Structures are given as structure tokens and as C-alpha cells.
Length: 283
Image 1: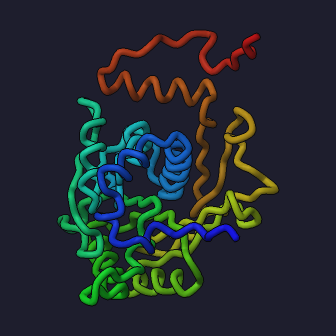
Image 2: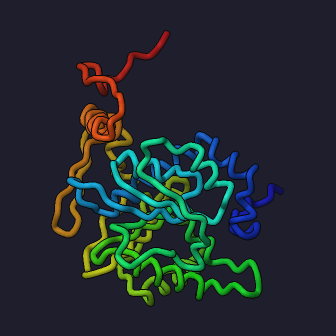
Image 3: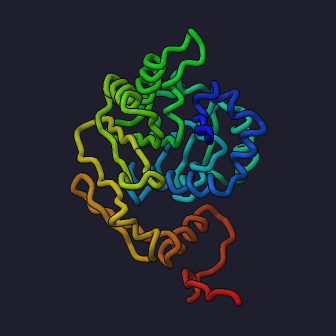
């Protein structure tokens, strides 16, 4: 009988699990890179930031900087926080000289060490579930979650959001996380993309620091994201405002990315009639 796969958070504290060997393997896995980038793009989308200016974002559990690259490509400034020093070393080594980022070595369960109102938003990819496990008698998951959410709430500008992609182990774990977020002052809820699919299903906790807004719609297997099947635009409505973004890989998306690079002073290829055009298959 095949053995069940052990969840990483069951293997011990993250600072020991993500040692130099595991951090290197994780950061060089092309499949992981692709999935992490996709989830980071979705988390950024759920933040519902203004499109006409750059924001200052906190990336909680930033690891080797995979999700931060998405923030950089969107022309945002950001700080990454992680407890794994090997992961942060990889992130720092891969950092571009003109990258809008910085890193902090910190256990998120001990709280985030920033001044009140510092950030315009926060994202976290595959990290929050680690706080639900005690790795010593001194650790209390409920207290660590509360300390984290309380300090995060203080560090965010009023009216901003925090979006956490995570892999809940059970309903009790979801209730624990949401209850501590609520006690810290947040409101919001879960957005579950592709709930019909065991493999594609992704859970996002969308937290808000002020007011009450409707949660954005989930993505469905019956109506997949257009950016995944063709090069047309996808739009959705949130809090009475309609957002429209060019699909990834489209000509408009390529031109927007080119303009961001130009603003950063980088050398880029000029626009041509071939931008965004699909290549014919090779013989």
C-alpha cells in the first residue's frame, strides 16, 4: 500500500525543513515556480489595488522570492519576510540590481516588525498554515496566529487588504485561522477557486482592514480564466468598480510589461507587429 504524502508542516519547524538542500530544490523546480507565480498573480488580483500607481506590499513567507517577482513585474515595491535563512539567501542572490524589494529574516508567528500603516497591502503564498502547528511546548498556535494578525493589521494602511493563499488541512484549521484574524480586527472571508477540482482547487483568505466590501467571485472549472485558454481580456466586478486587465501573453500585456521596464531604465526591445503573435510549431 502506497504511503500518504506527509505535509511539510508536519515535518517540523519551517526554519529546519527549508534547509539549504530543500531551499535549493524548491527554488529550482520549474513546476513549483509556475504554480507559485500563478497563485501570486491571483493574490495580487484579489488585493484590488489601484492600477494607476505603485504600491508598497508585504510578502509574508516570501521564500526565495518567487511571488515577489510577480510584484516587481507589476511595478510594486515590496518587502519579503521569511524565517528560512537559506531561502532568503537565494532570494538575495537572485535579486536584480534594479529590483524594488528588500528582505527581513523573521518568524511571522512572533509578529511583523513594522510601523503602523506602513503597507498598502500584503500577500502570502503557502505559508499561513505553518502557524497552526506547535513545534515545542512553548508554542501556542492560537497565540501565534493572533500575534501575527494583530501586528499585521497595525502595519497595514486603513482600507487595505491582505490575501493569503494556503492549504487548509481541515475545517477546524480554517476556523482557527479566521477566528484569530477576526479578533485582530480584520473582516473578510474565503475565496475558493475551482472548488469542483481536487487538483486545481485553491483557497484564498481575503482580509480587509476597514469597511465592508463584497468578496470577489471565485474562479470556476465551468468558466475557466480566459487568460488560461486564450488571449482575450478577463473582467470582474468588485465593490462596485470594474477592473479590466490584459490577459497574460497578449500584445497588450507584453506592451504594459515593456513600459514598466522602460520606466525602470532597463534596455528593452522595441514594439513590433510580431509582439504577442503565436509562433508556428517547429517541424
